[in-house]
Length: 232
Image (cartoon, helix red, strand yellow):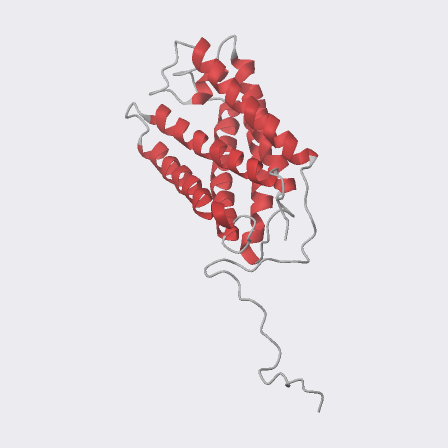
């Protein structure tokens, strides 16, 4: 007998994860700000700045009634093309960056592909010109319209899938409802855009859609570039 009492309780259990939160992954590789996220920051800022400039200099277009594609007509049309290019490049950069910046499994893993395809579609929408209002529709207008619609559909689906992934990754846990809110707002605005055609409100609804997508992009970039992102 050495006077030391045996441990009758056995080994102590490891602490349980915080209630309602996904367990952290200690062996997850460390992440740091990358060039892709920096490109996304610059492109989102360029998209927003371009839209604001067009709103300021094109007083002939009513933001309440006219969709933003009308800014592509006239002498300042190239600015709207740049907006499409920047928006598309931001989606492509996020698609590349988020592949390893969030845990995703199963069907949720499709969101980086959808982001990349949406980015390419936005760039295509910028390449092909928009017809003037009331002018006969051309092949270029058809390609532009279909590319833009496809881009936003894929963006919304990608946002929804990403939001689902947030519920299983501690790094994004605090933003899960914010992400879902942006995705839900974008989805609702996309449906309202179709319903509001011809009512005089399609312009503002479309701007809400674009704003929700850009807001989501800003949220993602800010979180992925914050100090300590990915720390266990």
